[in-house]
Length: 381
Image (cartoon, rainbow, N blue to C red):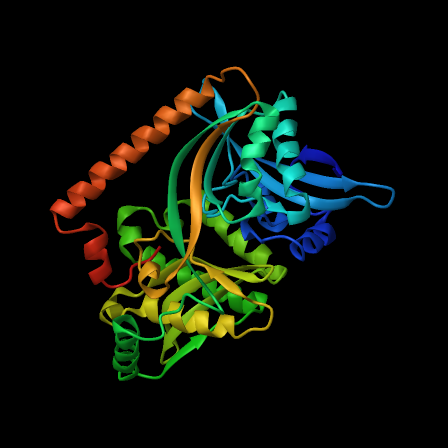
């Protein structure tokens, strides 16, 4: 068994070289990038604890695991929990772990949480990848630390790789061709995905404007509806772009952006983080066209092997891509005894899921829901 030590502290950029070295051995997660974590922490957007696992030996220590958790108060004066999605707009909670040390790293993380009196002992895992070594080691970690858990839910997230996932024939492919040809009749159609900081900043502002003019702006949920959220995401994309980890793909008609897809990159993977489009072009499904063309371009790049949709299974990406990433949601208590936060958070999650079922039932009664969404034009995420 390797000797593993764990450090816990605020996000920092001191170990960027070690982070990039870890990515050559581990499954990636862009939301655990120290640059993104620092953007969230330094703007006051989230209170983040960065856990780093180090292999100790005769030579220099080596980073073998990285995980970020955020403290969330359940009530103003009540208990707190740790969220494994370390900030709002993060869509994957899986720790980045060297697979050769997975059986040691996750137990070490949980032990460090249990031994730190400043940290809550209840962890909410959401969007945790079941196909990673970290999930395989989860049960062993709980057994070692004496914790308990509740598996809340499981779902499949649309994804695509070079080998599988793209629908190359059938009704979906036929409709994409038809929509592209119809859109081309409106003017010169092009897809751009420039990577320079100036181009990305300009394209991101185009995305924000498109989203603000969409139904999200009308409902007050667009990023520009919150000064706090807007400040964070501008910092997030700018900082990730500076290290080659973000860009914005645009679908253009006569040089005007009618759809924008914000992309993130980590290791051998890309992430379709957020999308928006001009509703005046909704009949052409511009979001689907952009995602399809951008995915084709990305998968042709050397070194990039897979794309995570960051989207639910019943969204439009589920109609474009046949690949699925198995994700789980779980509530975990580290160590023995009974933490008051566990039943409180469990009740909140049960209530939230019950409310969503009622909402989906009402939408289905009104002709909405997943089936109607599948027939509707692509909307912004």
